Image (cartoon, rainbow, N blue to C red):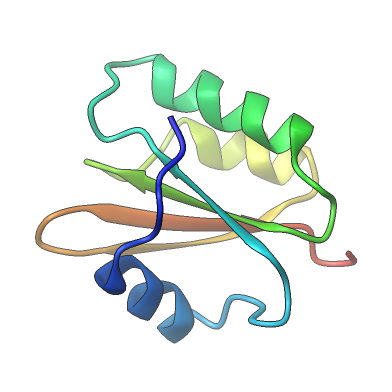
Length: 94
């Protein structure tokens, strides 16, 4: 389920040093139970333009996602807030 980023998510990602000159797509998986956040994120990444940054909004840090991102050559940054956890995912060489 795609959604627009919140001001909180946008500010958090901007503070994380995520590339700012790339298009962004937001995926909100806060209401999805496991394993949906993992599978939806990987499916979205497979269809995403190579230069885009995916912003995943979740209710927890996606611990099981991190090794899969590393294996696939993605960089990521997670910012934990009071209401949500935001993870930005991007290809470093795009």
